[in-house]
Image 1 (tube, one colour):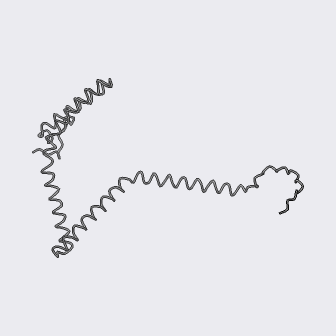
Image 2 (image 1 turned 120 degrees about the vertical axis):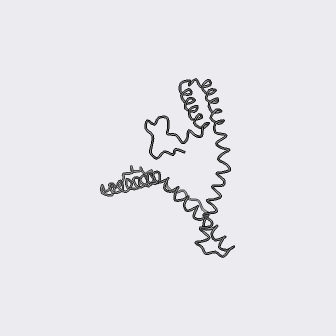
Image 3 (image 1 turned 180 degrees about the horizontal axis):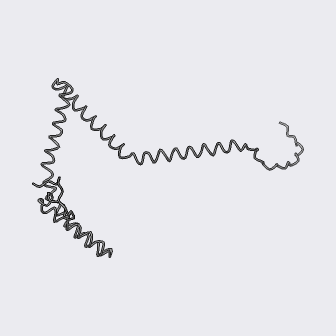
Length: 174
């Protein structure tokens, strides 16, 4: 292998990079495209934000329909009933089950709510001392006491609210 010493090349000065002349029309078009994309994304995000409740209801409806269809198919397989009759039976059984569950659970909850309100009032007193927010805690405790008194007297639920100056025609009077 032979080594040769080549003459050094003279150092070339690099020319400053000058951007290619741009077409004002293409730049304006890129700005319009970018603005349209950003506005489209913002519009889609706001649409999803405002439609969240509807989308959740739609999801719940699809979920319930799927559960009802699965139960109906199982009942049709077991009994040989027609789809319509099996669906009606599944809906009646599910409704009866929910009513029975409410019948069993709700009285226990009603019994525990006044105790919960009393505990919240005591906790608010301790919070008032710890944070030094006396006026706000006092107003909240008074509000809780008013609501607790309504919960202790279930018959008061059937009466018009205390703030109502006139009796309502549709208010139950049992």
